[in-house]
Image (cartoon, rainbow, N blue to C red; front, side):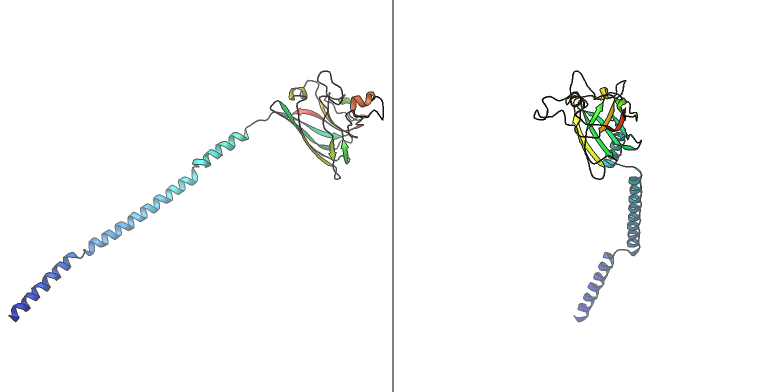
Length: 232
């Protein structure tokens, strides 16, 4: 009985050993699988690098759209004119620009080298800025469209205020004249005067009626800076 029991145990042990050995993966197969995984990972890494390089060379999505938009914007042409002002001494006094938009003109000036204080600021009827003397009378009177008197001349503008450092900036919108009227055959001139424009506003307690000079110029005085208006 003992010998049979021992024999049975030995047979069971051998059977388990065979099953366990059969369940183990073959080492050669395991090594082949490991190498295959490494090869796949390497290929995926190379593909990602190629895609990244292509992305750097070719703009896509919003980047491409932004590039196109910038190119279109840079070719946009704005309709306008400009006057570069000079003093009677020949020194530059700044620039005034005119941009037409919505049937109106936006007038913008950046001036320098002028006496501090308020000064008349007008468009004059003739595009000539001869030094004189007297200075710049060659530009004629204020620009007039139709039958107008000061202070409703088309060329009448708001006074400018020059700061202590002799600079001034001004920006306003007008519908009193068009760009085509600035660029007429006889030309126009932008003028800065020595005094402020009173716009013919003289109370009757000072005078029963304003004189011809006040009606024509608003007593703005001498012409100290002038620039011919040209298409920009």
